[in-house]
Amino acid sequence: MPAPVLYCCDPLNPRRADEHFADEAREVRAAGGDIALIDHDALLQGNAELAVARVPEGLGAAWYRGWMIPAVQYADLNAALLRRGSSLIVGPDRYRAAHELPGWYEAFTDVTPASAWQPTGPGQAPPLAQLSALAAQLPSGAAIVKDYVKSRKDAWDQACYIPDLGDRRQLQRIVGRFVELQAEFLAGGIVLRAYESFVKDVTAAPELRVWWLDSEPRLITPHPDSRSTRAPAPELDHITPAVRGLGCRFVTTDVALREDGMWRVVEVGDGQVSDLHTACDPAALAALLVGR
Ligand SMILES: Nc1ncnc2c1ncn2[C@@H]1O[C@H](COP(=O)(O)OP(=O)(O)OP(=O)(O)O)[C@@H](O)[C@H]1O
Ligand SMILES: [Mg+2]
Image (cartoon, rainbow, N blue to C red):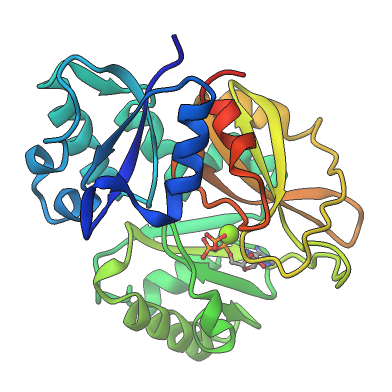
């Protein structure tokens, strides 16, 4: 029997899967898999018991597929499931490792831009001395700022791209604006990453999302934000050992072709919370989850 999959329910109709995941959930069922629903809003509001109230007792070990969950609430979800004779296949420790940059960075150092980070809380930009110390760990030149999970690429010039790490005022201003925009959603802390130049080919997706199950690249899709859906086959042989080293069963790597011809990992994510491009067939993802 394939492992069941927990989807987020529709906030307005808790007996149904959230519209965003409904087609995929249907495909899981069509492929012979079982699904159950959790309440993502309740979980993020701190009520994990309510969040799992519709999960049948004794369901066993399950995948999750849905909206991102902060690592602390993911652990709450697993604890609440355990009390009902169920659990998450990806334990809280491996979820955090794939979801937050400091968790996956070490395994990927050779294949991803150099990065340095500093824990901080929502609304709290690190003082300039700390930012300068972080910048000093990276090669000189341009960088980007993000938190442990997300960037503000929507505000690229104001709050993401740092043209020159040596310009302390610029560094402070851009990180400050990033912290302001992230507000209460700032996850974990501040990450600075050396900027690398990727090939700009408007006829192809600039980033590809590789879906790895048990360290095998099983599905390659355009990044969900891509306008183009043409996905050239990336070279992955040098990335496979990093994925294996991380030791997480279901992860995504977003890869981009650097101008020197190397495929680089822009970001790692837990496959359970990685979004699928709307042009992709949800049956392909469902097939992975039910082991087809
Ligand atoms: N080190 C880097 N060098 C060059 N460009 C980068 C670098 N890091 C990120 N970018 C660019 O910024 C974008 C956003 O970065 P990243 O994917 O890390 O953030 P995100 O907000 O988590 O995005 P996503 O929507 O994929 O979850 C990337 O898609 C890439 O175009
Ligand atoms: Mg990304």
